Image (tube, rainbow, N blue to C red; front, side, top):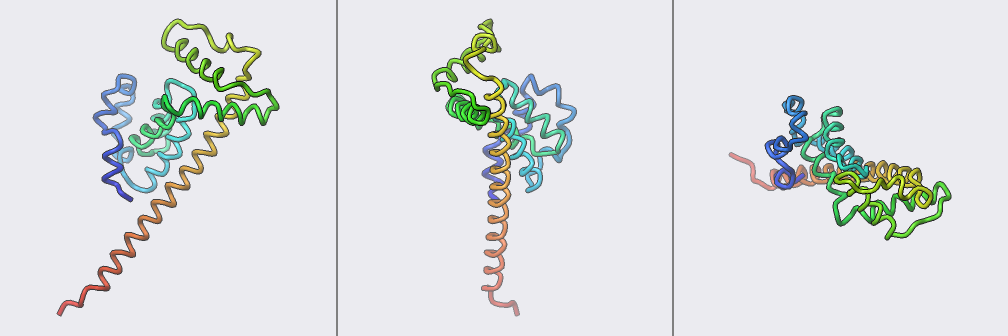
Length: 191
């Protein structure tokens, strides 16, 4: 696995500890197992990070950090994967979550524009003094369908990404080993 490239993409321990909200966890982050770049630690981080990314919280990174601490997963990888849901992908992911939940529960589907307004209203409500979206959209939007759909998408996507990561890691390891074996067999014996 291209560990050097992966290390360059992920945040450093110093960068993570600069965050004011994560300073509370600084004593727990001293465990060196949380920073190792091995197959087991990174694979657990993929499951945790992708699962955390689908929760519509402002504290997705906090959720990923707690999961990484509990399961001794790689912290930078878990935190980095929470950015699967970013300003560009949030609307399609939330729409897909509502679609899945509404389809399962037999609820009517809502438009993409309503999902966009809900996200904006939720952000205003959390970060400022906006209207409570849970009251504003009561009756037009099924919060249960939305949460059910997002939870199902989170679990399924997390499993798929974790298994894909494991398969890619194994493929890279086997091809690297085969390449080394071929190179060593092609060398003439030392006399």
